[in-house]
Amino acid sequence: MKNEITHSLKPILYMAPIMGYTTRLFRNLYHAHFGGFDLAIAPFIVAVGDQKIHPKHLRDVMPENGHGLQLIPQILSNDPAGFILLAKELHTLGYDTVNWNLGCPFPMVAKKKRGSGLLPFPDRIQAMLDQVVPRIPNRLSIKTRIGRKAPDEIDALLPLFNQYPLTELIIHPRTGLQMYEGSVDLEIFARCIDRSDHPLVYNGDIVNYQVFETLKSRFPVINRWMIGRGAIADPFLAPMIRDGEDAPCDRVNRFRGFHDALVAELAGTLCGPGHLLDKMKGYWTFFCRSFTEGARFFKTIKKLNQMDAFRKEVDHFFDQEAKWINTISSSRS
Ligand SMILES: Cc1cc2nc3c(=O)[nH]c(=O)nc-3n(C[C@H](O)[C@H](O)[C@H](O)COP(=O)(O)O)c2cc1C
Image 1: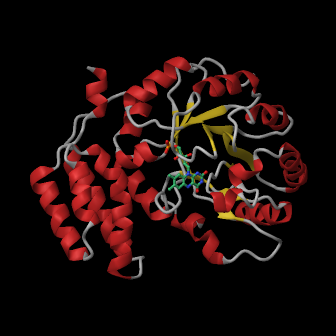
Image 2: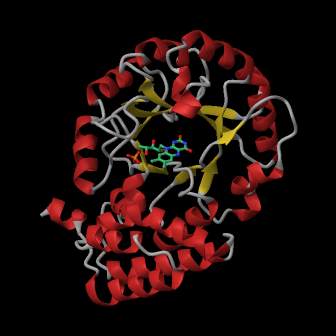
């Protein structure tokens, strides 16, 4: 078994792919301002058929656009020919590992038997792996949920995954039908540890240091952790988990520097202030969780329809009201 007790090792942290949020621009800025992550999985690229891949689908993973954070591109597909073509293209760009998305819960995706929609069909997964694994030049990892409808669908899949030389298995222990609701199933995750021959990465609901510590003590053999929404909300969380220290700093001001750089860079890439405002409102659904007055502030900016008004509200908030919720220190005291 590849999962062994790892008390003495530094945790290896993965930035989760969050489509529309953990884009190249965000990943680069985040890494420059906060560090903390060892690598990121990029939001998925869809692969269908053996047609040439349109350059716009590769823009997010073009190597010249990356700045220091190791990246693994992700493919959403149930079509071997399309997968192989895209994986080869990614290999020519320098990616020696690609990740297969078996977790996307959205009905539009799942009903086409992609993402978590494939999980009830082990035969199709096996056929896909039989076709793809010998024909791609890259190594393969898989990001999965524990099932589409039932949390024990993974039981039939683990022996199958064990037959292939995967680099690792990233498991978000919810079903597809749960979307992002309800609790993660830690019993099933524990069973996956016993039954998987591959190194496992835990993913799901690590929103503060305390949650991480609880998971770490429950799963001492796990040393690879993926964090998504919790890390967008609190960029000080990953450095704390990885380095084990809570370096004192003016969090509001450091966050503000990042936030303003994000607005400035997005303004240069999005078409018009309307898009920029929508994008920032999206980010604030996460950011607001780290401020004591965050929920009220988010209500205020949600109603705005001018970028100028947004900038004014944000400046006022940072100047007068913003207080960081220090979940790290409070959970340690
Ligand atoms: C808006 C949104 C977009 C997502 N996009 C992707 C994606 O492109 N690929 C993927 O594997 N997972 C995607 N996920 C799932 C996350 O990577 C992660 O598995 C999930 O959010 C649970 O981790 P967390 O609790 O740390 O956020 C997405 C999640 C959200 C909320």
